[in-house]
Length: 353
Image 1 (tube, helix red, strand yellow):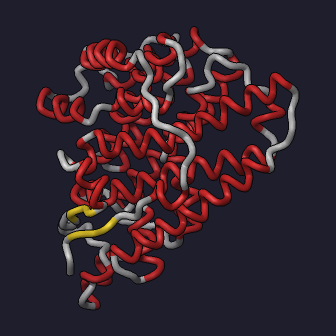
Image 2 (cartoon, helix red, strand yellow):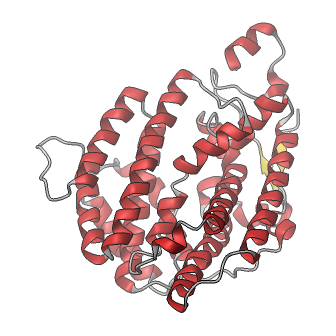
């Protein structure tokens, strides 16, 4: 089997119209946020160095290129928080993930309540950043973000539990429903609107909801394709669209990657169709809708650019991958083997699925 896969040229497939921009507060807020994160001493020095190399402040700056200095700092802090949760729970058992997510949820629901001595430092980090978000935000927007963060945190626990038990979602349809929660994209979209009072008439409109769902799906489908080999190397690729497609369709990795690229194209077409069919609102509501749709547009552009600029997925070969679209396929760790082409015996099949 070839150890190289070709990823689709996703942006050429869909002619995405949103240009790449970086928030001008990127460098200053990145430095301050890193210092703030380090005060909690959640990661050991060696892991912290690797974590900073991934440059999550750049991702936040690409996602939110036009927000204010204070707003942007909150976004960068929240991105550090998001990815710390991701890093920690990727390595935890279901029981340990449940304990950690309960701490996070408690701090999120009542940030005024001091945490007991000895509580995991991520709890205090949650309490501190959430207090600042509450003080900055329009109350209705903060409430919306809290609701979506709670959904995300519960989904993170479920993912850790599924990983421990070896569960793979049996169908693409089921995976889509689950991935919309674990991707945190709805909460991420809420962040860009913290300073705005978005009318319920806009967010609850079925056509806007379909548009939002398509935008969220586009971003995580892109992420699953690009992160597949990285997650495969760590043995956490059971929760990846490519693996679900391999299982459901009984096809090779390359065929599954191509299939995901076609799903991406179809979702983009649905997004553009829904964008043309959003209803007319009042002037204020229309401005809120523009903020919302621009946020979706920048997210996908930002995810694409960061995937090549950060070494998280492709090491130092991000620009090479951008040009060649070739990725070296990592080996699957023993006991976490889901590659259909490697299932050469009945015994192997029983273990891997």
